[in-house]
Length: 222
Image (cartoon, rainbow, N blue to C red; front, side):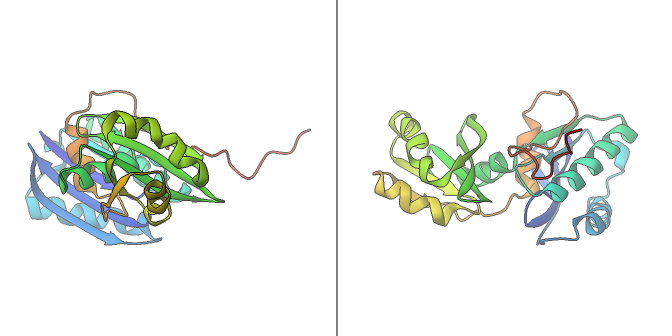
């Protein structure tokens, strides 16, 4: 299976071409803005490196969020347009799952936590075992996170990996709660792991942005 993986949702830009688990081409760049202009040239160059025709792709995988409003929409719009043109499925993967999958691949822990900074004293929280997502992404106050995680620690063990942009904020709270925490060092999603996760997903509806917080701007009430 030939898969194009994409991520534009947070503070990086990446694309990867993976065939049956083997990486044929990959690029990752730290990037706070400019994803829309840089994504298509990056994908074109990688397709050339791998000598793949676009028509040979079996799936297009993309991060859906949580992430920045603009970043999420850039990657998803590109993936959906390409999938529609090629008549191939597009698969959505959360940013938190992609980071946890990478962290678990590099460590012997049985489960991982991803925490992305959502500002305002809140984080986007997700939990994953080696086999599956255990807690889908949710928005939670940082000071409530340790209590939310505690039942999972009872089930999966006190030794846990933590990754994401809010890892440094969450780790001391988990240590105070008695967890043996390892910093997984992953701070941004990588399209390589987006593609690898997508290989095991079933086809479904086209990916949509994952928004866990309502927009600040509201329409006026007539």
